[in-house]
Image (cartoon, rainbow, N blue to C red; front, side, top):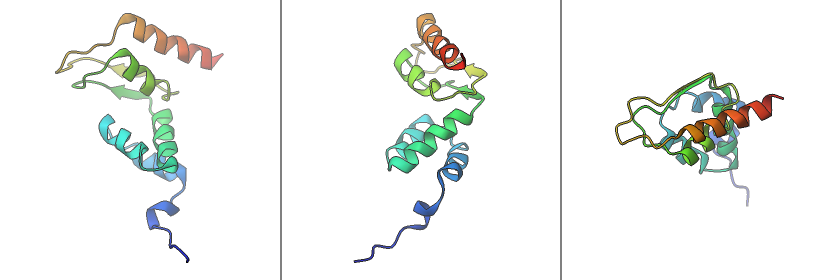
Length: 106
């Protein structure tokens, strides 16, 4: 039986990454990345293209932050201010993030 492919499944990964670049909710990005492998790759590429991120208003810890920003190769600005629920990011967590980025750059 020939199963017809959905229109969204025909989009190339780079176009999915462009679309996902407009999503600012990390919850929505996490849900999108769990749809299928292609969408997961699109989310990863969209994070890699971002040069700024804001965790303002989000409850983030070192592990969550590290998982997200390790994918953001072009990240120049990270806003962790104004957390409504108490930001749990430590100096050590930020150090690990920037250490990882330094290793990738060399």
